[in-house]
Length: 369
Image (tube, rainbow, N blue to C red; front, side, top):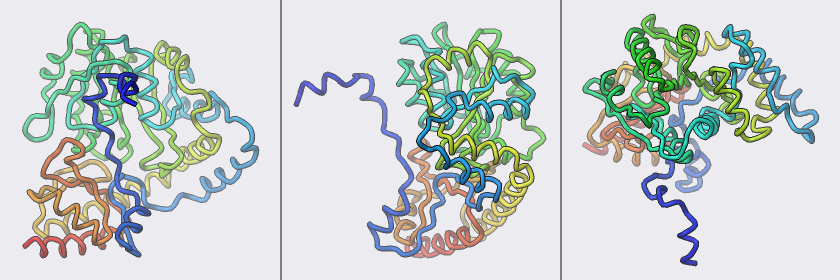
């Protein structure tokens, strides 16, 4: 019926639907492949520790009851870990879920969200969903941003600046002094800084300023993190934020009730205690990343420096390589979907997955001549 078109918001015409990485089962069904390796979603490929699996098993009791709506146990542990109060901790359904509710709690219709790009596409979706204008600040040569450009993009209607640090999809970080300068300048202008640190646990660079330290210094910023990456709980959709109490109180009025499952709460609590496991995952990821970069270099493929669990490959036929890799049973990410033409984003997988990817890539490059 034609009238249904009038029900839909007009401003959604300019919003692209999020392009998901192709699921393994779908590719197997389409191409009849027995083996498929997915290196497209930046997941932790290593098995979970026994303590987390046991916590998941325990959580399966009383599934007929609603979970704790405040995620009190997990919230308390996070507050202890970071030296903040429980009133400064948000628990939500991953970074995406948190940002949707966060934007709804701070945005008046017509306000602006400023964002350095390229970046995680769902920032735009969350901003538009809240009624905000999404203002992009393009990266300069070298994949970084001038602080002055970000500041100049802010107007009297700017409520917040959001950025990912480390950056998805670039893999770069904003250095300590530049982050401090940006945070203090925005604070002086009464603009909220939101820093998404989904990949922070992979960073070993001493020049990296953790947003938690920034929060302790300034207080009037928001830091989001997730259990979907290094902690290995992508399916359970658990994330958290450290934020000023005023923001947390507003958030608590609007977020979906019971949004984090009992299973997710138990698993995240157990994972947070596994410090040795996280340290080992970081070391194994960095080691595999180094090996993978070396193998790609020997193949003649250029890669960009990264501080994360993914690598950017540059090739003028990147989209064609992506399609041909699918037929070899390898799923990577078209960076053109993320605002980066001429690149592929590849997650660092298990050793055997990385080897399969490199051998498949060599085969595809031969096919392309």
